[in-house]
Picture (spheres, rainbow, N blue to C red):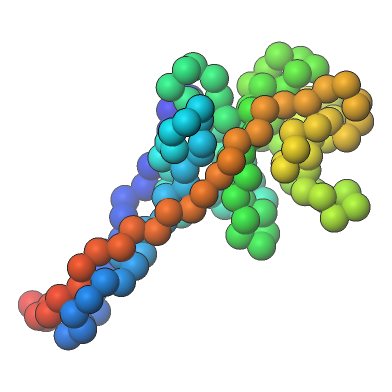
Length: 144
């Protein structure tokens, strides 16, 4: 799978303010090793659904956005079957902890720790996630 990308939105309303302001584009980045890796635009994530991303080392990450808008990332490989399917799992919560249930055998994985809620000896990788909003210069814009 390749990483997900969408086209940035361009403001269409003229403004006369000068300074810095968000451009409306937010990017989701994962901490891989010592570096932050831009994976996709926030707009590519749908609350309650997952997206798979191919990382530079050949592994896959499953990215999720919960209904409150918080992003998570775990390894996409289901350790029970070896299939790269966790991005297709169902999101839920148990005791206030968010999880994804594998679409194959239904084991649940904590989205914060990676721990399998159904087998204490199994876990998947987790990634630190951050949302980066682009900031650009805003100058006088004239209507066409």
